[in-house]
Length: 347
Image (cartoon, helix red, strand yellow):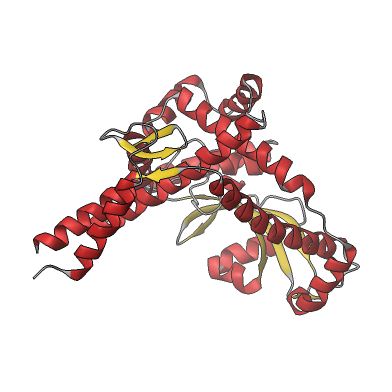
């Protein structure tokens, strides 16, 4: 007896494929078509393999297919937006791309940069392509969304009234930190892809970095380039505001070091914890208690929260509006459904 789910899937696929007879020609390596532009399976696979390197775990067949679909979905979205930006003449030009590329490279020696490209499995042109895409989409969103968002004083007052309890805060410390771990880590996300693999290497590395910071180098840039904390390296080691309990959760020695600092100071020695060796700098200290809307920081935080909420909504709506005007054929999704239908029928 045939599986009814398989029959339904097969019927669906017949309709889908019959609707795809017109339009640009596709081949075995076609993952999707966005209007007249082809996205190849090889492009999806390249991103997929890089994600696997970062994840460190081998996914199941179902997880692998889901990840590929998610990657392709993002590629489709990006291509739709790039095409719309092209119509509006907003595509980032070579000069804009080169400025951002130079900024990206500035903290690498040429040898280190070439090693980075090799480790990531990309070329300089791949990076420039990504820079052009992100800069272009940013320009499009700024024109269509960001520049048009306004936040009124009435909205700020209303938001604060409804969320006032969230501003009754404990004493807290805004800190930057840099972590060096004494073991290999496959998920390093610092800009230099730098990883100390032994305890001795970690101690030498953290001492050298501390000397650079105390000599005047910017803590956040050093943390971005060398910190082995995957959750904060890309933001320059910014842990934002932490209360006593959160500081203690890292380590009591870490908390004691932070509490001993004046605003703007970096602790004068590495702090050993179970995670490795930390460097820490105090950016600001917040008094505890109820913070009122008269506090400029509360006003700024409230305004930003409302702005972010509007921006998220409008970007989502804008993307869907662009999709309504775009012909998209996701052949990878069709193939996954077809394979599932064939597998079910054979059983």
